[in-house]
Image 1 (cartoon, rainbow, N blue to C red):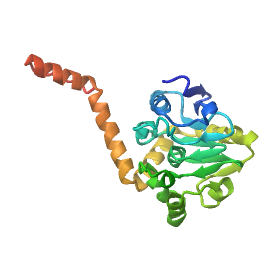
Image 2: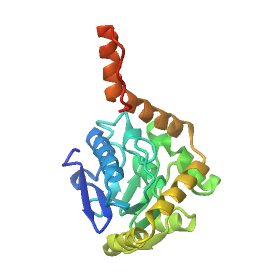
Image 3: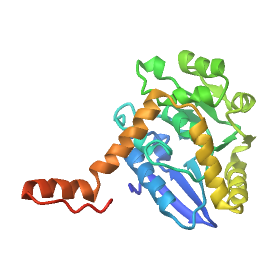
Image 4: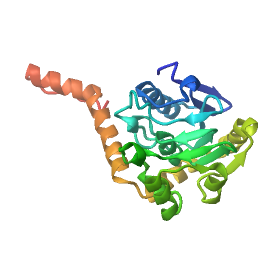
Length: 248
């Protein structure tokens, strides 16, 4: 994991995953994407961590979106449920700007707590680009509200996000992590098997956009190309011998 981009803190069965580049308003670049990818794998591999809180360092921005000077070409890898299968609960805790890829990340959170200074924006139409992952927004909030955000590109504040059902709770900035961790502790105290099963069932019920589906497929094929079996298959072919596959 890129230590200067993402931090991972584990305590009381809760993983706190932080985009830690406040000097750059936590903009998303390749280091952030790969750091998140590693963090979600660590979270899923942990026997102790039952719930994650995803947040950003500082109170100016959860993330100001992609670094347009060095935009990541594989954002899907850092998105829980897309680049990495995640069936444990994820709580978002956001303050300040939540832009572009930040909104993609928050759509994949199961519960979202916002500071009262939060501003949600998806301005890709204003810069002549879209990756399409955000289309699942229309299955999280009313269709026409989602389309206004996507097609007009103007931000909404935390109060409006709460009104349309995107945010569970709005709190003062100083109380953001307290509120998010309160949710996390209550979830961590419940039975993990039904909690994870319920998340899987809901994930299967929610509609997915074409880019999200493609990202999930890409992540699965990435895992095959990174597997020991793929390496063994190539070696066995070159050495003209039967391959010894282990399913790893």
